[in-house]
Image (cartoon, rainbow, N blue to C red; front, side, top):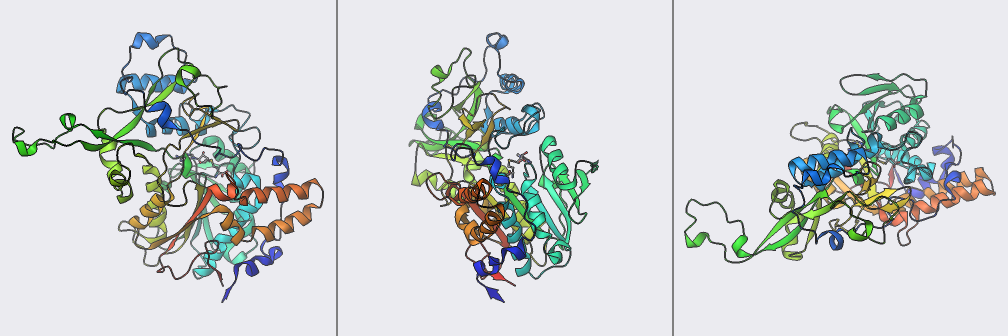
Length: 529
Ligand code: SAH
């Protein structure tokens, strides 16, 4: 039976019988813009393109007494001294998740985490409980539409932060015993030991023990005593053909490291000629300029640099110490510049559609995760699955129109935009997500999946019934401040004005292939019961 979404979701009481308190009230005083992670982008080109790429191997004595802004900066500088400038992806990976003081792996002060007023940014699940509840409902609608499998359902979240989203999803799903009882296990992919503990405390209780195995860390959830397993990468989660995985990634892909490239015109005399046994043969000489990709690399700024000398853009706060590092353009091909820009027809087309000066960001980890999701849902040559099942929901920011992100690296600290090269490890780094790239990777990895979206978060949440659900919550919270805070919070999530979260964040779904016959709820489809 099919029914229109709003009607199916109208009976909010049925779907959410146990509403919890109004989380939004504590956040309502935050300024609207500038405290989510998307408050503008770094323009790398104008500031950084002019630097030559010769600053990698530097005079060691010159740097001996240099004060680096963080221990990680010192380590990075030492590594660069040995190897030469490093790819942006290596820099990002070290800054975000390295053992020696990455942003998510121990660098920030003990008494705070990344989220909320005291942290660096705020995310949708932390703004309103309705966000996670509606994702729980979305999983429910997929479970219903795909035949109500009675066992083998898995919930997988990548990058779960404080665990708030999973808590809201589970609380919602608990109201539906049939799906709640079909869940075998919950998997959380988390790089941060501190956040892993915070998630365990929220989902299992502070006293619940956590044990370690070869796979990861284990505890038992307060909902239905479900086993929860924490792993550091999705590869550690077993794949089995009878499982029905429901996967969510909220603000995870934007934290994955990117490689950045610029297309340059190389004069004939310096073009890299194809190898030949007879170089003297005239037919092998390159006589016209060629277009080649050059990778953007990270190297230390000159000693004694200031924000003024580095021309830190006005959009970035100068309250941090001057950036320790800068982007430089490689003078010749690198391993990555030879193959990553060739890895997709969308990237290859830039040579003719844009030409010299074209910029390109490529996120190999995003392809790996998207391919993994697709293989779990639709099967793959390595993991055949007779009947595709499950779903993945990816919510993040990035172009919704298929354009490839450029210049999107940004640094965020205490709700301010800062240089992404200042205070490595203390500064959050994020980039725009290439949704079209994720769609391409998913459909390439598995013939058993199809992709829907991206659609703007505002559209997705409205179709999911955020208005109806929030009205119930607001009524319960009363007319005073609390009620107004609930109202303000949900409106912020769907705001489609310039820079609004409802517009800049997108939702994309990976589903079992069905020839596009059934669209998922939130993407224009209807609830199938
Ligand atoms: N989804 C949460 C948190 C977003 S922040 C929310 O919306 O509130 C990004 C999350 O991804 C954090 O939990 C961080 O520790 C985790 N993370 C970042 N990079 C990761 C990586 N490479 N592997 C696993 N987890 C990662």
